[in-house]
Image (cartoon, rainbow, N blue to C red; front, side, top):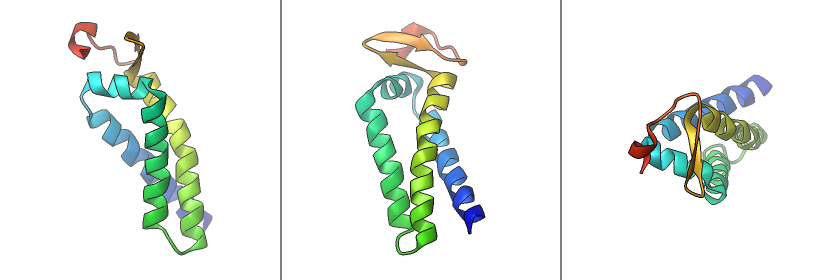
Length: 102
């Protein structure tokens, strides 16, 4: 049972990461730099997992674990991609041209 929880949480985190990386770099950096957007992403991840896995204890554990893993996915994505806060670009491991992020 616990293997299924961790597997679905990992798949959810991977999906969240891929979706974030598919967003245009300028938009992604602004989203990752905004506390409101990051909170909304966490809420959407937990809500989607609760809706998908509703009705079982394993499903509820999966949704909660996916939410917790989401708290690690966002900082990893920020570290990799960088973020923009208050108009200032903080580059990550992947560096973008600041003129192209507008």
